[in-house]
Image (cartoon, rainbow, N blue to C red; front, side, top):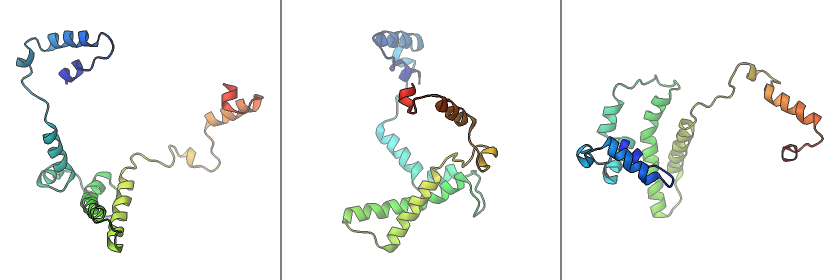
Length: 162
């Protein structure tokens, strides 16, 4: 991390600052940092193992709480959605290669995977932040003040008022 930070100094003095940091953090050069960043091939392989059903993924899933069936739980839903999404991706790939339209079963699988993806990416989405906001007719105080200020102005468009 320090080496990456030392390579990322912007501006005209960036190379000088980079050299000073490297001398301070790594006085013996490569001898004090005898490691290398992983290759792209290794990064891709690890990503593939973690994002497709595999023994490695199963090992990481051990010990993760799994909510009972029918209960909303983000991690459980994510784990349960993986096989469906992987299968739908395989079906979609074969459909594109064969340049054909999906049959009803394939279309339903793809639609189910899309619905699962849409539901899973909705992180921290709340309809209302507080109980007061859920009450009918509620208007945030900042908006009330804005309306009052605009009412006193002779200009009604924001860019004119600014």
